[in-house]
Structure formats: structure tokens, C-alpha cells
Length: 369
Image (cartoon, rainbow, N blue to C red; front, side, top):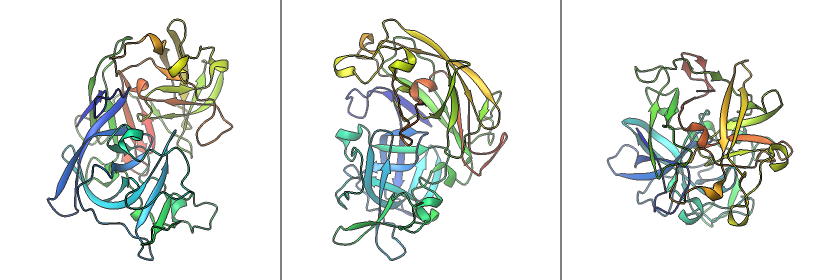
């Protein structure tokens, strides 16, 4: 199915947003609605659409006690909140039937104080119509969210809500958690391939790409000579930077619009000033290299560039050479890290294999490119 990197759903200047469309239906019916500009995200799992855009009456997912469920989902720099509903999800001719999804917004249930983080619950804060999470896991939380609410293992992602809008952390089995739609396909369900062309150093106003379902299941989705990198128990691979230098935890995440890594002191890259002060602005383009490796012993060396963001065209929304710091990994505040965001995907075929699913390179999860 088609992918598009452009300026966003309202042409509002979204840089390096990778978008696709999905059709949601009331389960088992032809009452359907198509959503465009869903952010394609290999760093998350499941379909999420804005409540403000949804016109379908999708059935609620209920807790064991019969209360409707809502979810608080942390992303790298924001948090989404909203109810969990059931939908048939259609993607490029494939169907994930009766799938739990999240509806993002506070109209149904007010966000509780325990759902912390910078809220991205409307178009103004999200900049997209939702998410299409096609990462390496089947559910967005997994076994920890099935633990009792009092357990230290339960991260407090899911809530059961009363008619008075009082919501409390709940235990939710895997079958009711927001799920990766690809894993629910009857075929081509072991992963995805994101294919984007290269872009010049100056960038491009827009770029078209391809999202292919399945790995080694059809004539058009073989692995070829791609290097397979298996993640650790937290879903991370290792980046050694510079080559022969320090190893860092890292993720491969199409939902991050820039490369994010280390800080100015560690990289030697100057920071931008003014409104761009959260990003790198080297005096001249820096050509860098790093080694990516994994717990299966595989490794590969990649080159990448970081340009001066302030000198790039304001009309270019597909950029392969933009970056910012990540002095602390979002889920471990003591560890510097690498987030290989969308610039990493340009000019590559990037494979994301789903946990427990068989592929020609073995059982997922893994990344390959």
C-alpha cells in the first residue's frame, strides 16, 4: 500500500511525517470510514484515530467487570489518552477483523491525573489523524498489563471507567489490548517492509513510498541480502558511535521525524538557536558513521549526515539529514541513546518482523535492512 511523506493532513508544515490511510468499519458490517494521514510508526503497536474525526459508532471494549476501557499511551515526547473500541481494520487489501483500537480524545472520558506526560489528544497537538503502529510486538503493552493493578509489573496503561467518568488502572488480557493490525491478518502477518526512495541533501517537498505486508510470504517481500538485527528484551538494538567507540541503546522508529542521538558535548555538533534550539545545526554538514549490532551477533556499518537545519528550505518536508539530541533515553533517564528516526529510512528497505511469527530469517522480532 502507498506511503507519503508530505506537509501533513492540513498542509501545516509537518516535517518527515510518514503517512498512510486505513479504513475502519463497525465489526462485521459495511459501515466504514477511511482515515488518511495516519502516522506510520515502527516504534508503536496498534491503530489509533482522533476522536474528533471519528463518525462511526464503534463498540466499546469492556473490562472483566463490564466497565469500558480507556488507555494512556506514552510516546517519546507525548502521551495519548482515550477509549478502547473494536473495529475491522482494512489496510491495502488486507483485513484485521474485530481488532481493539484506541480512539484518541477526552470527549468520552476525562484524562485522569495519573495519565502523565504532554497530552497529544487533538489535531493541534498530534499533527496527524492518528497512528498506524506496525512495530515488532503484537500488542501495545503485553503481559505486564494483564497483571493485577496493584502489581508493580502493571505499568498503568489501561483503565476501567465508570459512568461517572472515574477511571482506575485495570488488568487487561492480551486479547483486549490495542493490537498490531498486521499480526491479525490471515496472511502476510509476520511483519512489514517500509520502502522509501533517497532524497537529496536539500530535501524534497514530498516523497511517495511503499508499505508491503509480510516478509518472505510473497514474490515481492523477500529478505534478499538484508542484515537481520535481533533486539534485546526491551526491543532495542545497539549503536556504537563513533565506529569503535561507545555502545548505546537504540531503536529504529519511523514515527520519529528526526534522527535523535546523544548531546552536543558527546557529538561535537553545534545546537541551533532561536525556535530551532532543540536540534543540531553544525556549521557545515557533518558526515558521520556508526555500527548497528544486535544480540544475534550481526552488525553493519552505516553512514549518515547531519545538516544545518536553519539553512534548509522551509518548503522541504522530506529531509534525510536532520537530527537532534537524545541525552537520555525516554524510558531510561540515565542512559544516552540513539533513535534512528525517519531520515534512516530514506533510500532503504527496512523490515520489521513481529514477535513469535515465522519468517525466512527465523522467528521475530527483528529489524533488517
